[in-house]
Amino acid sequence: MRRLALLLAALLLAACANLPEAQRPPLVVVFVVDGLPYRQVEQLRGDFAPDGLNRFLKEGAVFDAAHYGHAFTVTAAGHATLLTGVSPSRHGIIGNEWRDPQTGAAVYCASDPQEHYIGHPTRALDGTSPRKLQAETVGDVLRRISPQSRVIAVSGKDRGAILPGGQAGTAYIAMADGRFASSTFYMAAHPAWVDAFQPPAAEGRSAEAQLDAATLAFARAAVAAEQLGRRDAPDLLLVSLSGHDLVNHRWSAESPQSREHLLQLDALLQAFLRELDAAVGRARYVALLTADHGFTPSPEWARAQGLDAGRITGSTMVGRVNAALAARFQADKLVAGTSASALLLDRRLLAAQGLAPDEVAAAAREALLAQPGIAAAYTRQELASGSRAGAPFFAAMQRSWNAGRSGDVQYVTKPFWMFGTAGATHGSPYEEDTHVPLLLWGPAWVRAGHAAQPVDMVDVAPTLANLLRLPPPAASEGRPLPLPH
Ligand SMILES: [Zn+2]
Image (cartoon, rainbow, N blue to C red; front, side, top):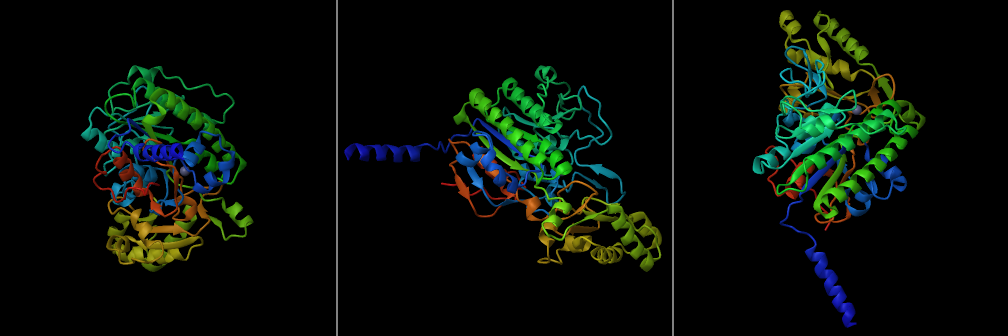
């Protein structure tokens, strides 16, 4: 009995003492799986390798109801929200691309004509800097308070590295030849290890799995060369894995190809985590795994389940709205086109015709709501003033709408309706696109367990800041996640 009591006392002491509350993790790693809906993690969890996603699911904190709160759920918006803790309306990255509301000119979220890739060709709208990101990131705060800290962001897509990396991090992006490059925004020339990097042999992997394998191999090279997690200052490594989104666009998240890709990615993650254990120490880092958005099933799949679903062609939709406006205002093509889930009015034409933008926007909204597949639409005036507060999707649409960058009539599709003639996509305010995995592992700092209460993805940044003993990013709207205890 006495030995049992002693044992219990020792266990209790260990349980209380095993969280080094005052100590920061030497390394925080954030994995963003591009386009991974939480339902897919739940469906495949029985098939995962023992120590990849299962390490997070079995030994980590699992947030079962983590949702993005903004309506237009796309890659750039999600990646920017994750590390800033704010919605697109505040960080300004309303979509991957949009059109300038004044001039109609195409804008890409990370393009910057002042900068170019180092040692690789740069095309017109390639992403080369985070100058369009209008909110600071966790990495910006870390580097301000701890200048020796390193913030390294790696991705197959430029926006997947540049936006999480923020102004003070360093982004590395996969190039067409399988190697990685940074841009002149970050440095004049690469460190030697970057130019020495060779992508791993394909070993029969699909192109998408090979992209993820190369991204993880480059992240591994960064950990070794930059001594991440092994110096006095804590480091932040941001790894965005782009392959799954490409697979899901082409085949849908319900396809055998998507299942196969996720299992391959899981095996790659297992290998990466085990190498990180060896290089940094299993008890010396925290890892977070999440996604930038989920995925809507293809309309064909949804119809086979007996659901109302369909496809919308953007040019047809704009043509019909323009026809309705022409009948009323006697002017052709008042809508110039679409811009990040909004209709964009032609400002010059409105001025030339002496038409009031708010009046034309209100008429365009009515015409849009009469189109198949459109669930809700609100005008610039409504979104800016908040006059429709409480209306369906209004709050989520306001979080995606930015006065200086967004169009004039923001819309959302009906459930299972999507733009595009084939495959599947995302970008809606529905569960399929907003509900993502949010998994946090690091036994020295995070206890295993499930949190069932709804959490918002703006909560990720303040949580990472908390773990690193930093104040949250300045504009952060989130609250630290309720960690299991
Ligand atoms: Zn996508």
